[in-house]
Amino acid sequence: MGDHLLDDDRAPRRTAEVCVVGAGPAGLAAGVELTRAGVDWVGFEQRPGPGGVWSTHDTPGLTHAWPSLSLNSPRGWFELRGHPMPRSYPDFPTAAQVGSYFDGAVDHFGIRDRIRFGTAVTRVVPAGDGSWHVTLDSGERRRFDAVVVANGHHDEPLLPNFPGHFEGGQRHSRDYRTREPYAGRRVLVVGFGNSGSQIAVDVSQVASDTVLAVRRGGYVLPQRARGLRIDRAMPAWLGFLVNAYLPHAVAGPLLTAYYRAVVGPPTRSGLPRPDHHFGAALPTVSAALPELVARGRVRVRPQVARLAGHVVEFVDGSREEVDEIIHCTGFRTTTPFLDPEVFSAVDNRVPLHRRIFHPDHPSLYFVGLLQAVGWGFLPLFESQARLVTAHLTGAYALPDAAAMRASIAREDERIRRHFVDSPRNRYQMNGAVYRHECRVELRRGARRARTSRTGAGRRSVTT
Image 1 (cartoon, rainbow, N blue to C red):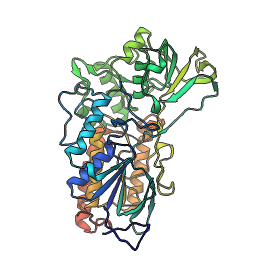
Image 2: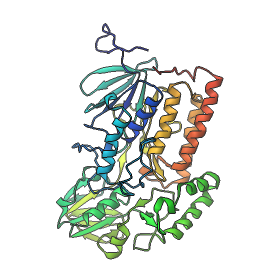
Image 3: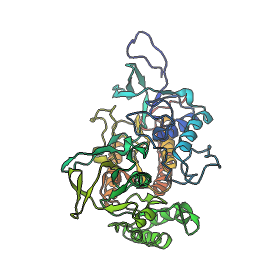
Image 4: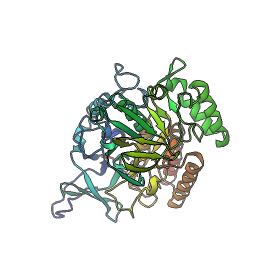
């Protein structure tokens, strides 16, 4: 299983068998599970430290959590197994606290020395024998038996193409850092997701006027409801039972009715009425936005129709004069180091078995390419990482390529039926249901592995 530096085949040198691209939450989840299983691996991260967008190091040109951002998932739902967040953290930790948690996690699990920080992967190419040639931004090239893609999906901004021309300042939420530059300015925030809502709240503290452009209504979750933390008032087990065992035509209305009973009508503060049931799109977690809308500190408008100088016209014919536009319009799912013929997520659709496995390249794995309705993404990343690790060690065997393509088609159809058609929903899932499906898949793959000891052609890479 030894490998060579491709630059000089006369000088063989053993390297790690598995390459992990990225040391954000998904990459760390993968690295921890690989380490637990005794799999030899090396991680590459373009930032100076771990945590991805939550990194304690703000890297220009890369997406970064702004200081006033708080975690949308309550404490306990965004942490690595075996390493809980400190109890001194609030229920919804700050960006700095989340970054500090991840920085401490690499030492807790003893994996800091396995990750090369400040090193970007620029190219990953099939070697033809199931292994991979990996090129780094330094020009170094190495061969690995397997690659785990965990670079995240918050790098390439998705910008709208509104007709007309705007003469003020514009930026994407990727580049938002502080509210101070917007003091006394008239600001338009485009987008009703978690970023748009939190930025609108933040900017409204200093802007002379804050307008939030909303393409469609949505559901806002407070941090507490009925005297309980919101994850206890709207528990994950309820979403699992409803979505796993009831027809979609019943699950949607039932969850919507439950939301209204716990939180209240979504239009109560003046936000637009949703055109979908609760759970058909990511809800927004914000304690402050409904109150600010009700007070008029944040004014809501529909989708932008056109731009003209400093004037923004909306689809209902209303107009606003603004100085700055912040586009909170999401991201494209990209893997720039992979040739599109190997993998691409066109329109943010992820053509992977269980969102992890490539039908044509069984030694190429993906962790973290998902959006989920539910509490916490890290448990989902860990579920994916356990499947990856089990396959690498021979404890799990994949179905054949035809069966994987059929499962991908079924999953794509489920997304089309169950979720609102928008870029961030095209790789959507229900988190609790997905975790269950991963456990079921692990058991099925274990039975396949026992039947066929070769594990669908994969070899163990344990040291």
